Length: 594
Image (cartoon, rainbow, N blue to C red; front, side, top):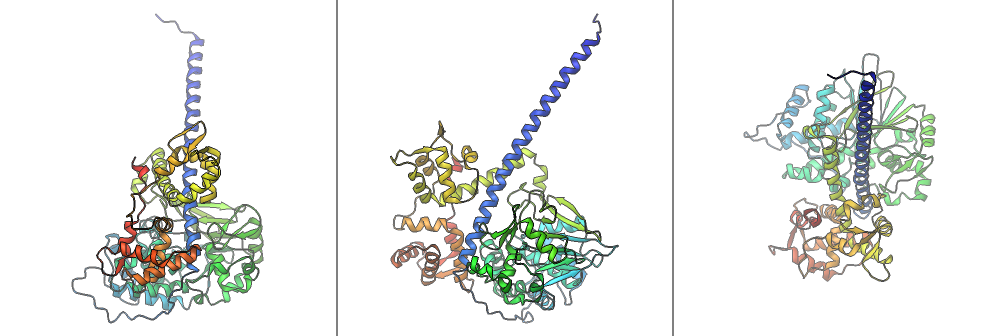
């Protein structure tokens, strides 16, 4: 028979308490490690994204585009009897808009006649709107503010499901970057334009930096439109180019809250912005001219004012400096926020433009608020989307969501692991395309050509070449499989970042340049391919390389270009298929299959 003693219970309780504390400590450390991995993954995605934008801006200054914009009549385009999608009438009605959204939910395509019809009516309406919309929120209403959507129709439909459709009683502001990256940019544009036509006083669209023809060439919108509308795609793109130039630049709520896509600079003058001819500043922002000297006269230049509104990002330090990470706009500090908001008698700046893990983020003593509405932006599980509800008290309330059902089923560890693997794949591609530069940087720390350098030197050289601002020493275990005693065999590591050997007749140096500038090449190709046929002649191919070599400040001989073109003309018809060309040179990271 067991005897009971008070100390027995006390001892058991202490053991249970210690066990609970140990479990709690382990769990906190586990979550902290996952959070560190998540933040590191986030830095990889964001650094690569901004580096791509910076390179895009450099390329655009070398390219000239045809800015002649014509008005295209849709009435001569017949709708065949076999067409099963929605039939729309002008003026646009809520009933027609409902049918349109239902069709898009079921992946139906709107006929080109109706696409041009909506775009034409939208262009007419936008022309009479001011550069800065002023809206009022009364005691019976709330206004909803959405950030970047980037072609992710699932996010837009989820917002409407959770929050309700735009109407006279439920006004919305959509803060730019409707297009690119996602696969349903055109559907999003048509839905938003439809609501704008039905509720012109209650739906407000701000321009983002991706509402730009040249940016669309690189980030997918141009390819999406031409793929969906092979016959009338060029007309649709021309009209969209015109529409983008007429989108308003900002919205002010109750004279106190400024909503703008990117941000401000120390020279931002909203009175000047309100007076400028915004449509004259189309896609051809010449960012290369916005130098330190140019910024000194910023207040006199409409183009520079718009660039700052669309491209700028906040920073924690005081001051205003050129945004060298993106290559356009500026970084502005809390002192600039204080001065610009004070000068215009505003109390809050709401902007988008940057993906945030929770969908939103305050900075500058809660006077700047970033809202981002595209969930799973980098990868499934990478971030939540969010939107804002704001009443007459002008206090923002946030609603967060995750559009992907796959993401909602993942554990925290699975979500972080999935996103981390995707980020590391993207980073390995960046390392590969800079292979020659990396070898040169490593050899500076290896005068005896041993093929081995210290981990510190490996990290220093890698950052010097890629300029991504990443913690390379922390990332080393995921990137370098073999490292002993703090030393890295960089020659073996470089060999692991490999692709299939090219044909012997193709010049290796040109191929490496091609891999390194994969996105720039595609952008230039699509600019030169003026008829959007998907084919370019040998002469156009030569022009492409001349533009690229001018951008890179390197010499490429005409013979080398001609040999490369002939090697890629597989069917010997004197032209090169762009899509086959880009597919043939898709990067393959063999180390990920090892």
